[in-house]
Amino acid sequence: MPIATPEVYNEMLDRAKAGKFAYPAINVTSTQTLHAALRGFAEAESDGIVQISTGGAEFLGGQYNKDMVTGAVALAEFAHIVAEKYPVNIALHTDHCPKDKLDGYVRPLLALSQKRVEAGLNPLFQSHMWDGSAETLADNLAIAQELLEQARAAKIILEVEITPTGGEEDGVSHEINDSLYTTVDDAIRTAEALGLGEKGRYLLAASFGNVHGVYKPGNVVLRPELLKELNEGVAAKFGKPASPGPFDFVFHGGSGSTEEEIRTALENGVVKMNIDTDTQYAFTRPVADHMFRNYDGVLKVDGEVGNKKTYDPRTWGKLAEASMSQRVVEACGNLRSTGTKIK
Image (cartoon, rainbow, N blue to C red):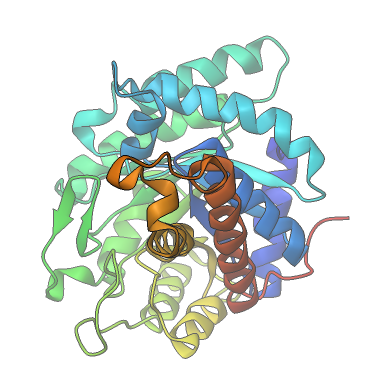
């Protein structure tokens, strides 16, 4: 199937919300990790989301000039071709983009998709993220209003992060403290600024103690039940049904979460969960194993010539793809999206 159209992406999100499951959003940094994600979704018979962060896009742009837009566009165009061979719907998304990178990343990509739509084509990406969590909420929402209007014109869904996620990702970091919890007032101010769908659809990355990376038990206190409070508070304020709730939530910093925490998040409106750290490890682990096991084959030791079959990137690359794809299958199971693909 092709990359999801705007209509199909909206249907995917609607189905997830109604069915209380979520799509894994897998960060990719290469054509190989893209294939691993697509393979995992196909094997799980789940539609899904593939996303590219600013750092991932810079890496994809090549180390000669490190251009984020070039990297993102190149992988998206590649994805539009190869996704045809996988029997699932895939939405393309750009991950965390802070204020200082908007002009070099999200805004040019929005403009590119706007031109495509004006020419009768679908947008290149299906959603973009604005990460204003380092700004005041007022400034954050002011920029979100501008971007939401542009995204709507380009048939794109905007993702907004209104309060911090702890830890560090692509140079954006926040301390792990009590500010990692969105309040009902924060949610109401967001609805007042961005509407509840009438100004354009958006995904909301609210904070309930989320932290990027993986931490030992006890270091992070997640409160996914907080999402219910946010939905109920906004529903009451605007006269909307409390169930399934006015917001489409995103779960950031989800690597290492318990099954109970994930289940509670799903019950309270999460439709997208970002997964990066765990899939990075799954990709790299078999490569490290291969190198250690074939030390004298991948290296030319003591004047020998090594073994081309062991240092051929295809040899260890296939192992990496298979391992990462299995982690995506596992994620689909955890998020209850297995077997839910749109027929």
